[in-house]
Length: 206
Length: 206
DNA sequence: TTCCCGATCCAACTTTCGGTTGATGGCCGA
DNA sequence: TCGGCCATCAACCGAAAGTTGGATCGGGAA
Image (cartoon, rainbow over all chains, first blue to last red; front, side, top):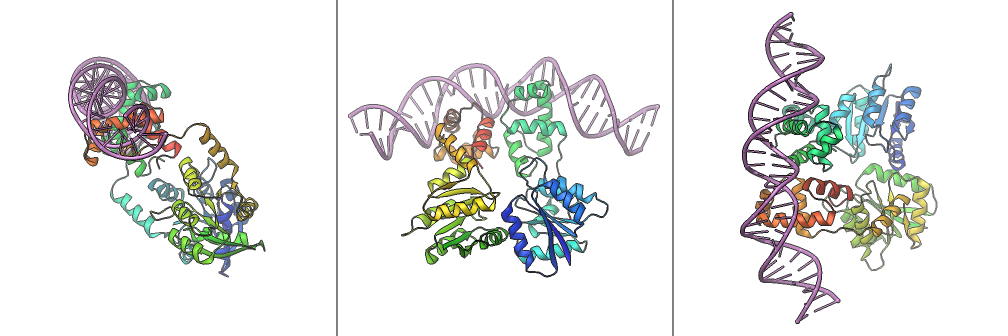
């Protein structure tokens, strides 16, 4: 018997998962959470085998955060991420947080159940599309931006000019340009608009 | 007895809705569809009272398209839009397509059921958050871009320079700039980056 | 320790790219 | 028939953006 905790902010999704998993006598949904903190509490108290975790919650805290906390418990359950989104940033964040699987919500039921079984046995279960992206990311080195650079890029994507960015960050315009140059080389582009475009495409920016 | 058809590409969501609606003896889910075309077919063949319609499908056709088609049937059922997203563009598109309600997927079950009842009686059911946005949109005139302007803005958001846009659209750079000026005035901004930022915020751009 | 590298910060120069102005023809609806 | 919107373009101008070069500070690696 595999004991499962659901974590998703949508009541519809929780009900759907309950219904889909109810058909299998091996699976037992012992609790469900509507926000990350509740998920951590349930994972601690109920000691399930697997936690099905959404990434996007309405709150500030994300499912990746909750995953990290759960995986740092004494005898942590496996965390299976189940989300709509599949940008590179989300995937990488979840994997780094210690997720033992990554599925998309449009996955067919049998694939979902198979992944739960695999996770309960300590194996990894990635949706094919996800696995492909991960490998691609491994091949071509991931351009990671420094904290300051991401701050700058964020403001650029909000439509701010260099002087506005300088004002908001309390630095000189020259510094902003310097950061931008580094961003350009890292992303392989040569203009601010192109930078936000590729950053958005690769999931660096939301 | 209210006859209902579900249209959502996620099996999990379909199962969840079925489970949530099964508790009410008045409601009868007579069919579910995984893509827009199937939804139209079911709405035609089964003649339900209400169609619960997602907006985002994996395909090119959107739920708004399907809503339009369904509402143009001889004796059309009410279409209740049920989606995650709530950008202004989505809402307006759905309402214009003839939706008789707009709910978010994180709505509590009783609210959902109440909305279905209202829709079956020919009434309108908007989630409070949605209603507020609609009113706000009514107050401040909606800046609608021409087809050419949206094409240009799209390419800008992809990081293209003016000359690149001109090349891809087979027009002169001067024309591109002209379109951009119109876009700026319509959006109330004065730079390309700011234009994409506000367009993205207002849902003009995805 | 020393050296190097990356991050953060800044100044001065150059110019391209972007934005402004103004003008034309076509189309549609009033 | 006229006015307005759309799409198209040319020429001008300047600021904002990009380039080059350099300083400082930490934290590793050697």
